[in-house]
Length: 95
Image (cartoon, rainbow, N blue to C red; front, side):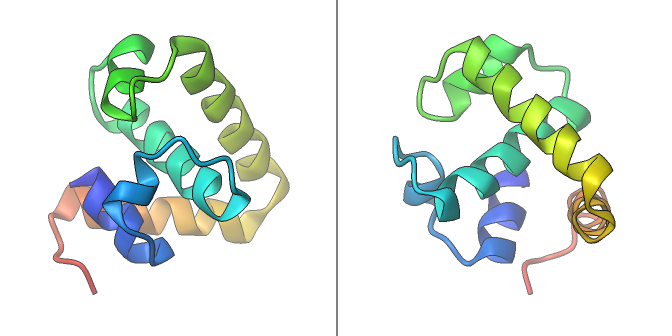
């Protein structure tokens, strides 16, 4: 559900979200999805990394820190995260 909501919001494909791409247009949505996975599941950093293209736990930790920094710096980004979280929790279908 997290992957579906994030890919829909950012207009990217699941394949891109799970790819090894380091393009900013792909990494930000991937980091958002990792942060939401950490917040909404009981998965460890290692387990989250495995779901996102077999990434290392350190990569997931970097993503979490990046999202937290953006969250504090940009109120609009914080609002986006809240909206995505609410869509996931409510089980709302993609728009």
